[in-house]
Length: 236
Image (tube, rainbow, N blue to C red):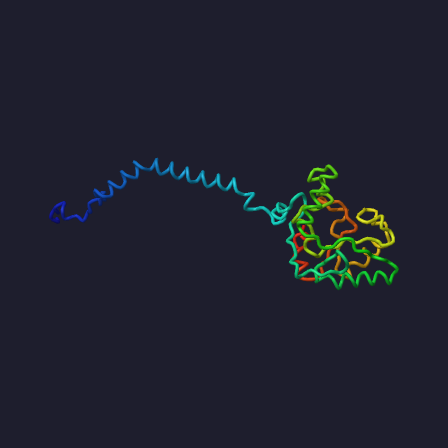
């Protein structure tokens, strides 16, 4: 018979216990005390962020077209005035941008060969002159600015100030000068068919939602400078 072993001889480990030291206990107490305040602060910050996002989508996601539209005045886009050193006289009282002179004169000569006689009515107009035209005629016709802007650009918003715009008439039907009836002339019909060959484009057609139809008003797009000037207009 084996001798009875003392209980201490059995290899029975005591359960291990982990105790919080004083430092950890103090930290936990602080977290429990301040947790409501931290939660409130987090909630306020999150609400403010969401509110900011809700209020700013129009500024962040506005399209380029919308931004360009905001640059308009009564439907007209802004244009800088051409410098004087880039203007040339093509006939008495009519100046144009030097870039378009040769094409414009060549177009008139080619039209003459076809029995069409183009007459130039108006070329470059300074911003000061445009100011007189816009406000004086508006007053004479007793029209509000928005109504007058349908047929005349405000100063600083006219293609004529760039030197790249030209008003054209039919020398055989002068009664149609600056009138929509010009579209019925042989000169206009010839321009519709041939003007693109000389890099001219009708500026204000019947589909323009801002400005009345002007069959006499053409602009030149045959140089890099001209394309830059009218880039916004062509992008609409």
